[in-house]
Amino acid sequence: MKNIYTVFLVLLLISCSVKESEKESVAQPHANTSSPAVESQHSGAQPLFTKEDIKGIWTSGETENASFRIDEDSILFVDSYEYLKYEFRNDTLIYMEDNIPFFKARVIKADEDSLVLSNEDGVRRLWRFND
Image (cartoon, rainbow, N blue to C red):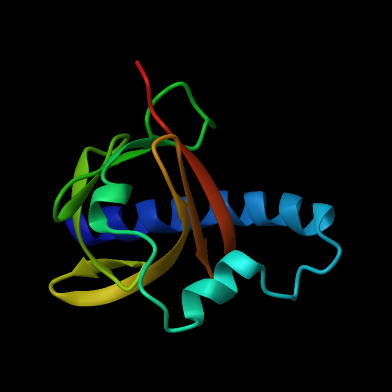
């Protein structure tokens, strides 16, 4: 039953990012071309981000609550109060279930105020949650 909730939550997050990517594809006429930020991530250079950069409480701004909290080795999804293990390798956030990766998102930007993730469904922008 826990697995069903986890899968449902991930699908919900993906659907939210799809809406965001649809908005961005309208604003960017060359949506099929890679941005310089994404290309620099793939160039084999030193990773630009560390696990410390992504740790924190993040919100998409869709509600007044936080979306999730990234800890040292897990992500707490606030609405469902469920933890999900993750790994962070070469600027890629990898969701794990029973030590099996099932979802990946590349970190495009991570600073003190914002986190931008990209996956096959599009780009998702998040901000640090402040009470």
